Length: 175
Image (cartoon, rainbow, N blue to C red; front, side):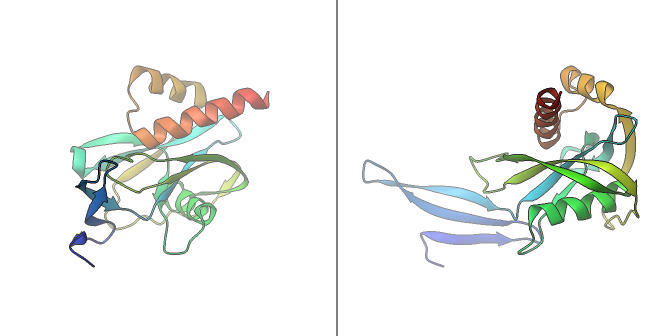
């Protein structure tokens, strides 16, 4: 890797690069870029019109926050496969009906991370399989209560906000 593009740190999940970027005026600048494998986010709805929200401890912000089930893509893994795996691992359910809700780019100013959003329904019991470091509890809340939590700020996780807003639009257009 050249001095123009330098690996600063390689972690278990992310890599931090310093990249030289040419500017239109002929000069250049440097950007620190976090390389991330991407992930999948799942809005799972059961037959009682309840959505699965996780109360998950996040060390980076030093608090437990409400999130939808989600996880990182494995190398060469399709986002749908990630979504299916993560839903069962974190929520303990599998789904027969899947809807692609699009993608988001959460932090394009410094990261190449892309998150793929899905809605899942027609749920069956599965088996949880949490990673050693995951500290979370799955809760099934009435969908209307969860949407209210978006608007009151009780849910402030960006990927969860985006996926639930896409879900709300999908459900509105479905009826």
